[in-house]
Length: 172
Image (cartoon, rainbow, N blue to C red; front, side, top):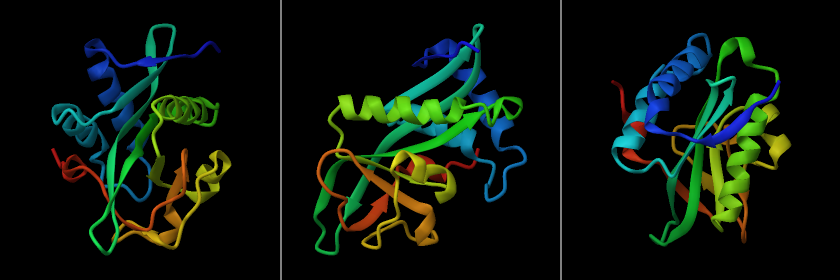
């Protein structure tokens, strides 16, 4: 299996949407709006990184990264934080390391960008292998604390409330 990772092009948009729909079709804990979120991030120019996993000229996976604002109780903002997700892999290709390599590529690029860190909402059993951990002082309202995790890339994890782009409210 020779998987190539690269940034999306306009020719990939339909394939990314199809992969995202397929990846979340039978997933628990989803509102099935992930493809709309990616599209809304792109339209708002908030899709900081959009990386595809490609094999034999077919997109088999995708990861999106976008800015996240973290505000403490005094209104101070932590700069340079990004949210990882949605991340999608074709169902028939899941469990083959494609998602892991997309996460690793995304984190490598964030380090190159000198990002402060990365947050995500996901299964701790999966994402802790990359160094993500829940932090009591960092919260995403309405989310069980153990499932909202952070990975500092430069410095420490700030305390406060994380705010994702309004694109994460996209429903169509």
